[in-house]
Amino acid sequence: MPSLREIWQSYRLRLRRKRLLWRAFRARHGLRAVADRSAMIAPDDILLFACMRNEAHRLPQFLDHYRHLGIAHFLIVENDSTDDTAAFLAGQPDVSLWRSTRSYRAARFGMDWVNWLLWRHGSGHWCLTVDADELLVYPESDTRGLPELTRWLDARGQPSMRALMLDLYPKGPVSGAAYQPGQDPTEVLNWFDAEGYRHEAQPKFETVSIRGGPRARTFFAQTPSDAPHLNKVPLVRWHWRYAYLSSTHMALPIALNGGTEPNPQMPTGALLHTKFLDGIIARSKEEKRRREHFTHAARFDRYYDAIIADPDLWTPESRPYDGPAALESAGLMQRGLWP
Image 1 (cartoon, rainbow, N blue to C red):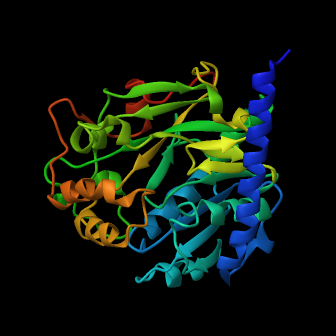
Image 2 (image 1 turned 180 degrees about the vertical axis):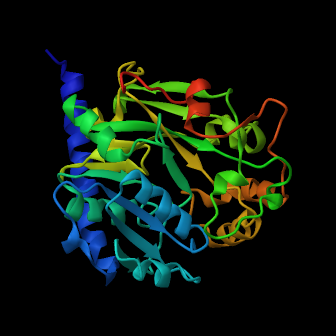
C-alpha cells in the first residue's frame, strides 16, 4: 500500500502534467500552419516531432535518415529561421510544418509547441521526438526499422524506449568538421567518448540522470552539475494525457521514463548528437547573443566562449564511430531481449 508521501507526490505530478498540457493548449496560439498535411497520417504511422531553427544544411540527411528508419510523417515547428529551413520543409510531401516567431525559451525551449502537436496528432501513435542535430540509432538500426522495433515493444507492453544523447566530434579543431548538405554527419564527426559517464538515480521521476562525454570533460570540468543531461526518452507510444517535462529528458507520467535501474530485457538507443559541425562557431556566437537556449543564459557565456575558441575535443581515449555496433560493444546502448 502506498504511503501518504507517495500518494501526495503522485497527486503533485498529476497536477504538474495537467499544467503542462494547459501550457501546450495555450501555446497553440503561437503557431501558424504553413503546410498542414496531417490528414495524410494513417493509424499505424510512426511520427516524428521536432522544433528547429536555421537547420537547412542538415535537413536533407535528417529526413533521409528517419525515412530510412520508417518514419511516415514529420510534424515540425520552425522557429523564426533566417535561412531556407521553412521553404525546404514546406516542399516535402511527408512534412507538416508550423511556424512560430515567439520566444523559444518562453515556450519551455519549444516543448510547449511540441507537446501541443503531440496532443493533437500523436495520440495512439509511436512518436519520436528529437532535435535537428540528433540521429537515433539502436541495435541493428542500420538494417532493422522502427516498425519492427515498435511491434516488438508493443508485444511486451513497453510504452517507451530510452536513449543516451551521445556527442560525436572530429579529430582536431571543431572548425575542421567540414560538412556538405546531404552528407552523413558521422563521416566528419566520427569519434565519441566510451567512458566517463556519471549516472544518478532520480526516484521522483523514475529515471536516471546521465552526464559526461566531451562537453562535460571540456567545458564543465569545474562545474559538473552544469553539464548537459544526456538521458532521454525520445520514443513513446503517445497518449493525449502525456507530456514532456524537461525537453525529452523526462516525461509524465513517470512510468514512461524507464525506472532508476536499467531493465536488462529492454533495448536502448542512442541519439547521435551532431552539434560539432564546422558551423558551430558562428552558431555559438549567435546563440550567445540571442540567449534563448538556457534558463539562466548568462551562466553559460563561458561555455559559448569555449566553443568559439575552436577546441579540439579528441583525446587518445576517444573511440571511432563506425555504426551502431560500436556503441553496443562500448556498453553505451543495450540489446536486451531484442532478437
